Length: 412
Ligand code: NAD
Ligand code: MG
Image 1 (cartoon, rainbow, N blue to C red):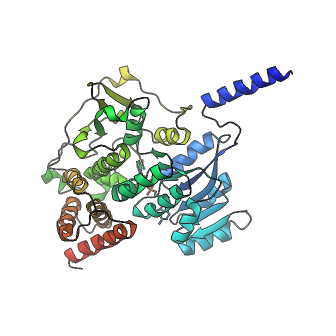
Image 2: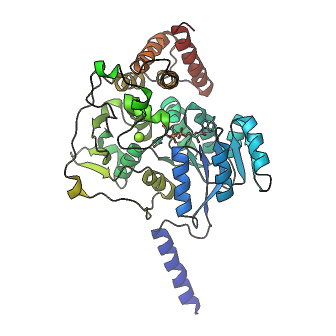
Image 3: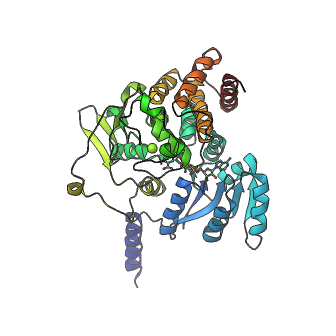
């Protein structure tokens, strides 16, 4: 083959590879998955499994589920794995003694995982505020972040966003609504956005009255009509607190004011969110409710690659309908707007109070409607302690304070 032909071949290969979102020259894109045993984590690994030639796993981290972790280690061969629970980490080290994998534990281990040198992207799929420090450490080490862990932005958006800019990294949304908005922003000028319209399914209790909600059990709240997700976020979706957290997440991701973020209920979960521009044009992203899509989009951004699965059939669907959210009955959403507008430490109180109340509801210690009541209680109590520009220590202190505040409030 002549030199010329050879060069042509390389150019063509480059084009084909780019078209399919594969990487050229540098080999596999190494990623780190924090929260690999959860709903988002396992779906991330599905995407990696489907694209073995272009994605590889450098490190994994999870809380305590070492059986799933062991299977993941044997399949994806990461060189480093963190089990937050030290005892479980020891057990996993014994189980994997035949493999070349280092097992670490605790926050130190989590930070080591988040900063493995050869990885270029971290999927932040841990649930809760424990995710803040690893995300910060990863950005400082020059990694891009595919962010599912919304608590990180809700409580520390004012720290994360400047850090992303300072280190010239990408913050890629994994949450389906934010991925939809992000997709609708491609090729457009963010300054020309009039408003962001986040869609909500309305959850399993849409249309119910407060009287009816009094009787809701844990089993009722764990049944989401459209999405299959982790337990905590499923309960948050039913109370609309999840939508509230997403409003705050959108504020940071897209740099808009709260007045520019509208929530609309769209029960079929077909429109994943929309952007209205200054000229009145509205762009929307639609698809079947499948988290693999936003995860894959973040991993291959800006490319789109084949994703197996169902496609929308509009004629079969027939219609899509819309409603305004009922913020009186589902007061968690209104409280989220209040907390977001107040800013500073208040979103942390909102988030921590919800985490605490949801845990109590899952232990069957409080009633369903009390979740929002405890959030309101903690936010009111926090007013005198409120702080404008909290650093990470302040945020974690505020989290502790909130748990304490609810414990005292319950007389325990
Ligand atoms: P999940 O409960 O299914 O999984 C949570 C993961 O975090 C598990 O792997 C668990 O082991 C890990 N984890 C928990 N504590 C840990 C610790 N101390 N150290 C290390 N790992 C720890 O939750 P999920 O539904 O996958 O949600 C994860 C995050 O993604 C949440 O912030 C959620 O709000 C967000 N999110 C989820 C979905 C979804 O469809 N599930 C959609 C959008 C956003
Ligand atoms: Mg969402």
